[in-house]
Length: 367
Image (cartoon, rainbow, N blue to C red; front, side, top):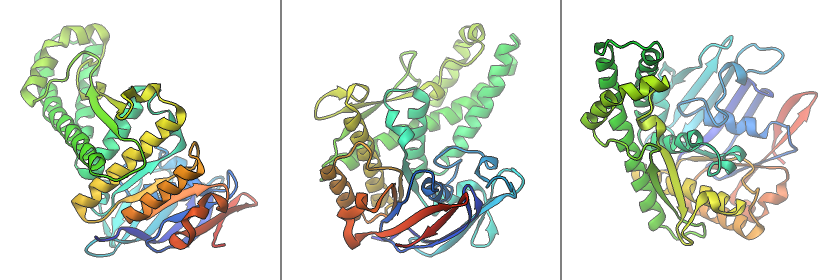
C-alpha cells in the first residue's frame, strides 16, 4: 500500500502563526500544547489541502493573522501515491483563496484528486443531536473524499435552487421560468443522491470487513417529506408538481438539500441520538476509520486524518485502541491534545510537535 503524508508544512501569517515550518514523516503526528496556543490552526492548515473551506468552514479572510491582515499562505510538500506534489494555497486581502499544484494554477476541486483529508473536531461531537445540516455536511465530506466532482454537482444544484427560490418568493407564476432551473436541479440532484447512496455502501462494507473495537453504525438517508425521488426524471417531475406548495412556503421543500443522515448503533439497535456522549463519539470515530479504510482500498493509500482533541470522551483503553487502529491503517493522523501524556500509548510510532504561544504568536517546535 502507498502512503499519503505531509512531509513539510509552511505557514505564513495564517491564524496565530506568523511563520511556522513543520517537517514530518509518514507516522502519526501528535501536536500538544496549552489551549489557545494554535494547535488546531495547524490542523486547519492541513485541512485546506483539500477542496472547500477547511475544518472550521472559515472564509479566506477569517484565516488571516491579525492585526496585520496582510493575507496568508500555506505551502505543503506531499508524499502521495505515484509522485510527490507541492501544494500552495493563499489569499490576499480577504479574496477567495487560490491554489497552485506543482507550480501551476489549479481549481480547488483538483486538490481532491491528489489528497484525501478527513477530520473529526469537537464541534462534531453533537452531530447526532443537532440539526440535519451538519449531518449532510458530514456525509458530503465523505462523498467528496471518493468523488471530487461531488462539490461541483452540489454547487450547480444550490445555484439553480437559489434562483428557483427567488422566483418562488417573488410569486412568479409564469411556469416557463421554472422549467430550465428544475431540469438543472434534477440532473445535479440525482447525481448527488446516487453519490451519497454509493458512499453509504462503501462505509457499510468497510465497517463489515473490519476488525475494530469501535462500534459499527448502520446508516441510512431519510427525507422529511417521506421520500426522495430516486432518478432525474422523477425529481424533475416532483419539483414541477410541488410548485404550488413551494410558492406558499417561499422556498423549495423537496430535494437532496433536505436529506438527513440517520445512524443506529448496530450492536444495540439504538439510534445515535439516544446514545451516551461516549458512544456518540465512538460512532463518529468508527465512521472516520471506515472512511479511511474504504479510501485505502480504493486508492491504495489511506487519507490524511485530522483528529482535534480526539481523546475527549475516550478512556485510556479506548484511546490506546484508537492509536493502534490508526497505525494499522497506515495513516498520517494529525492529533491534538493539551499534553504529551495523552499520546504515551503511541510510543515511537508517532512524532511529536509542541505548540507554544509567546507574545500572541504561535511557535512550533519538537520536544
